Each structure stands twice: as structure tokens, then as C-alpha cells.
Image (cartoon, rainbow, N blue to C red; front, side, top):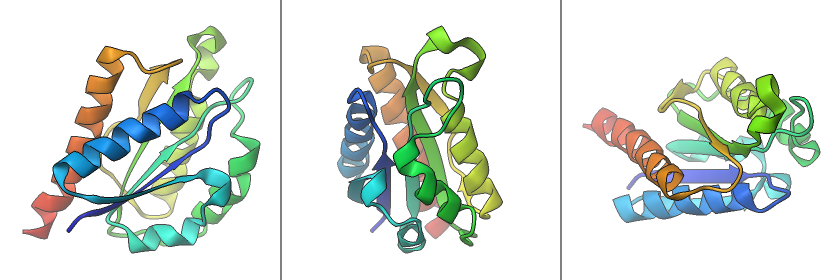
Length: 152
């Protein structure tokens, strides 16, 4: 059975919605999923899951969520070799070059921890719309199938 951990940080609720969509997509594929708010999550727990997904928001001009800083720093010290990850998150295109930069920063932190990127970073403009839901479901499906194809 594939296990996934979905961790989110949110101010507006958009990223919790994104995390819910990803969690439901994994469950529909048959995975067991734990979803948790980032300040309640311990990065070292990621070693217990096949797939890790972080759903961060980008604050101001490219800043990471304050409540996620401990998690981010701890993530960089882990050895996640053999683990699959994905990063998706809501942002606001109003911020131009800083749109969704927390998504990219978390992606880099996972790679530095030795994890394997299972799907391209996914940035959603504000609240997820119908087309975004389709993209998020495809994101989860790609991660799930990478794990299940490597188990054979």
C-alpha cells in the first residue's frame, strides 16, 4: 500500500483546499494519506512515507511561511534518498517574479535532501479553479504511479 504525507501552510485557505484535493486524489488511487498543517508537522516523519507533498504559500516578495521555517530547515538536514516528493502551492501572480517562489524553494530543499522529484512543481493562482483541480489530480496521479511502477 502506497503511503503519502501532505503538508500545507495557509493564510487564506487556498492551500488547505489544494492539500484537500491532492489528499482526495491519492485516496481515490488507493493510497493511505496523512494531511497535516506545517506547524504541526515534523520533517523527520517524511522518512516513513513513500510520497511527500508540501503545499506552501509564498509571503510578500518570495518569503517562506513563517510557521514553516522550522520544517524547512529540518527538511534540509534529512536523508530522503529513495523517497518521492512533489510541491504544489497557491500564489498570486500580482507578485510577478515572486509568484510561488516558496514552491520552488521547497522543491530545492527536497532535492538537497536526496529525494526524487515525482512531478513538476505546480503553482496555482489564488484559489483552485476547475482546471487547477484537474492539474492537481494529474499531479497526484503522476506521483502515485511513479511509486507503484518502481515497486514492481
